[in-house]
Image 1 (cartoon, one colour):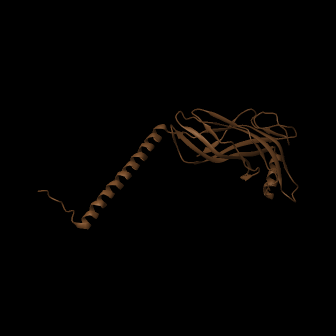
Image 2 (cartoon, helix red, strand yellow):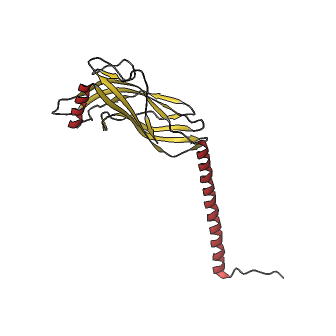
Image 3 (cartoon, one colour):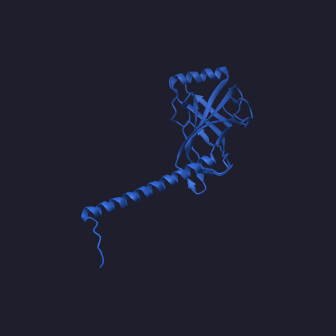
Length: 222
């Protein structure tokens, strides 16, 4: 004679279903934790480094401020920036990176977007964007006075800034976006001649590099 087991009625069956659901949930959670753990172990083992940036050249084609009654700044520059990926197992995607020039913390050119690029292991990229103020840059009066004083003193410090987003690639895995901020200082001398940052022949308002022919390292924050 066969024996039919009773699960304890309707409530007993619900109890068994809840136990099964809990087991499934815990199995999924354990799998996710294991995946995260493996990714972290691989990430720590690879130890990715931030890319290195260098300002190779800054040609100041013009830099003029209108009379004190209106403080519009008109400038055109060409910056040559190099970036190197020092990682042997990690690639870098540069997504939507903007370049612009600053003077004492104030933007003096509108952002110029660099082309989207992937940088492989130990690869180097070089960009030479033109940076312009167009008609959108208004220089605060105190900065106009400061710029005139710096020109009289013979030295002007311009910061070339990069702001955008990068992703890391390890094998087939690609990370989410990380905020990239780069600052490349360029100390220029001013006189009546023509010059540029980095030794390339340029023109405009007598701006010369200091020191000439030497790439400047940039600070990088990711």
